[in-house]
Image (spheres, rainbow, N blue to C red):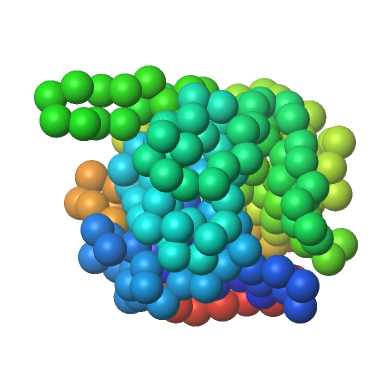
Length: 227
């Protein structure tokens, strides 16, 4: 499994059999380093509806003629905008070709702004993505909560991707505890340094992970790792 980071919370995940992108906030992201036109994938996965995660999902899905996986209400919204979708919900899983996606709980909010109005985007979620025998856990935007320990106990997670930005999600201290609970040997920090309000030191966070016996990867946009 090869994972490429494109800033904020966007991850491109690829194996020999498939490619997916999670939370493709690219064109509006000053740190992405790539345009949505350059993305070729078999599926788009969304953790929730906020614009810094929903991003270019519709454009990418339509251009690639591939489905968007999302919690039911957000999937319905995408379908109404002309995209193919897979309606998901918390606790459910679905296998699509060689991709298996399971949606987990996350503690955050989820909505879409259209003009002066906000549209309910369903519950926010984390995603367990299994491809060719490897499992990535993308926690989405979440606070620390106790059932992250249960997610770690019930799933063999090869690598976790966790927000560290604080203010709007977990900060580094809570993300460190989440990493231990998830039992992942590798962690990618997400959702930091995109805006001044979520400025954090990713390298320092990964140094702290190392003290816990966990390998951290403070990736820059366009950088990849393999697990």
